[in-house]
Image (cartoon, rainbow, N blue to C red; front, side, top):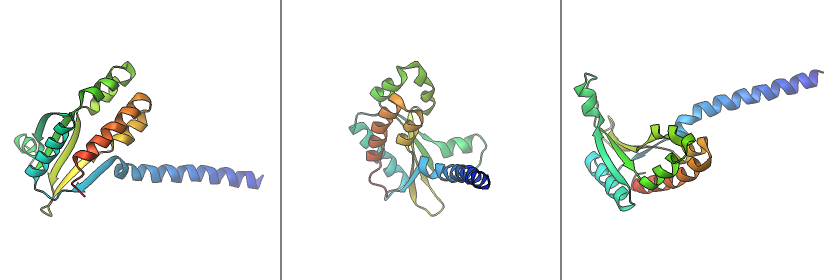
Amino acid sequence: MKSITAITLGFVAGIIVTGIVGWNMMPGMMLHEGLSPYGTEETVNRIKESAKKKGWVVPGVKPLHKSIMKHGGGKVLPTMLINLCQANYAFSILREDENKKISVFMPCTISVYEKSDGKTYIGSMNARLLGEMFGGSVAEVMKDVSADQQSFIEFAQ
């Protein structure tokens, strides 16, 4: 009886520890950051051009830092949000009603920002992992989205 209790407690403790570790690792797995060898403007332009060459549309580049300042949030270092869309990928996901909620992640966004060290960084989401969380056709499409996005920023560390 004692061994069954010990095994059960060990199993439950293992699940709890695994959950805690997973929860703490998620931000690092879901979000990527790379150092750009270029300044903010050049980094944004390189990403835009690379995306366009792969057939993506760049609906806009938003200066988040300016919006924050304009609306009374204070001054932050330059932070640019590059909105990217690939119509075939979007269609492949949104044509199924059960996938419509994925639209909250559309268009895909890559951020380019400066930090207090004076360097420019690129932030991106792990599209592949996001797709795996939803499974099915979303997972299939997001593999391709992830590969494309990585190619847009391959010049960064």
